[in-house]
Length: 443
Ligand code: NAD
Ligand code: UDX
Image 1 (spheres, helix red, strand yellow):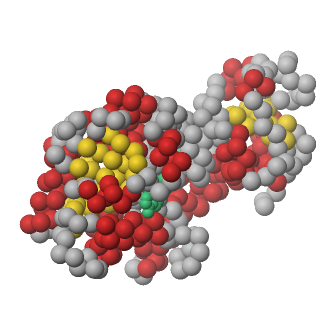
Image 2 (image 1 turned 60 degrees about the vertical axis):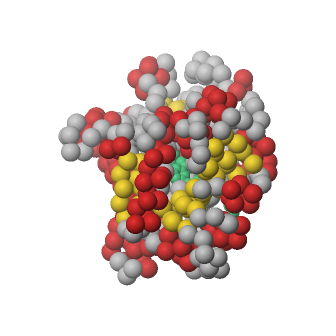
Image 3 (image 1 turned 45 degrees about the horizontal axis):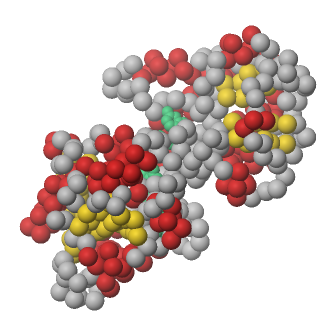
């Protein structure tokens, strides 16, 4: 029986290992983490993360062939395959600060694997890492030369939060990169056999290590680029009277382009897109590719522009100040069906409005008040329980005119205008009210 251990019980490690255990009842899977509270939550009735369908899969396998443990070293030592799914955030200090991936957690996991291992192991890069990381990991793993054979594989994860279980059950593809040696190819086959329990073999793609590592960064950069492209168009739509939803529909009908990831929004968020593009930018710079680095940097710059454009719309529509005005913020996570607030556009929007002394009431069904407080790290706002956020109409609001600003293009603009709201929706023809106001001065 193959034994799998995954280091890192986060948004990727938890759901991915739960799916492997669910689909491979004969494989024992142990997910380990240094965060004891997180492990305790995985072993409780209230899992540490919300993902539709996750509870059911965990309940079906936990205690059978799926285990969560804080005894990291013991389970790593016993495993045949060790997945490393630790966080790789953007470096905040030192060389490459603000761009490069911080590999501190990865490095300490690799050192620990090297120290506790007594048998050969396949070590799988599940975290998103800079291209060529496997080379550095190999050096760490073999530094004390105990005669143990370590094979490093790159197996990047493509799940999106909110649809993680669906994405894991039916992935577009599974990517496995390995060394082009007999031992490397054998390791690739071993991992391939795990996924082949439920993924059709022609969707399990194998390639060289560096291609697999780079493919992950490339996929995220190109997905984010589509959003920045359509968001850039949304600004032009507002200036010209075109409707970005219509433009995106027309563009997406071209089978070479396709309809997905063309929804204009207040800007992309989440723990991956910005971090991975900045990482890509840094790698390009390190390779002397300044023009390529600048090209990808622009995807993040347009995203920042979109977020500040949204705040300026709110402020300029409400007579150039929101000071003392009550604003309800509906939705705080970076997208629906998740409680994850990492890099959510809502943080920037709230900061922008709080900076102008607005009074905010924030609600998200998956995010706690404490989390919102921590994210905003400010005390100058109210947090209202959902019951205080009844649907409002201008007849129930005391102050008129009443405004709605839709950063997701999910509301029915016409209906709301009909009952008297002044509505702004990203990239849609502007409400005459908004259109006739002088633009907010540049910040
Ligand atoms: P996360 O922060 O939710 O989880 C990482 C976990 O690793 C944490 O619980 C942390 O305590 C643990 N950890 C760190 N160092 C450790 C160590 N030395 N030993 C044991 N545990 C350790 O992160 P995540 O969102 O799951 O992301 C993990 C990786 O996967 C990142 O590289 C990310 O870029 C990548 N990724 C994330 C997503 C996503 O949607 N979140 C999707 C694809 C890829
Ligand atoms: C992303 C990738 O999609 C996934 O493959 C990778 O493994 C991790 O990074 P994730 O960040 O979880 O996944 O969510 P995603 O669905 O990609 O959304 C990211 C952000 O883009 C969200 O804020 C979302 O609202 C926004 N978005 C997405 C848009 O603004 N418009 C779109 O058309 C699609």
